[in-house]
Image (cartoon, rainbow over all chains, first blue to last red; front, side, top):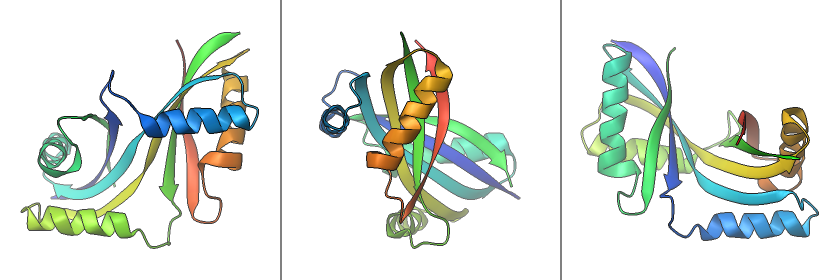
Length: 85
Length: 85
């Protein structure tokens, strides 16, 4: 078993309202960042887990996302990186 | 001016308590994912902004993080990607 560091992005599903992103966009405009067109706010998780290889680590994290970490109705997730440590 | 999509990771500063990460770790253990050693929970922002070039886009987002998006006392940020759209 080796230790892997797996990064996951969980973001609001496209087309759904993202009120937090809208609030950040408005705040940036107020601060003078007029060039900002849009902001999406999601979660960035870094999971350190033991697994036989990188493929097993990714599969395991994918199952964690499905069962606990991401809301399947409103959120999409993607595995951004799997790094052996 | 071109449109750039800039991804930012904002994470709790190393060494500081990350109660949300601890809660997720415990929940994953309860669900049977015993191999999980540690979880860190941060934010993943995708900012669409207009800029002259990628360097200007990154500089502008860096300033947004310093002035609004990241808490300088408790959080670190990194620009993960700058992509022209």
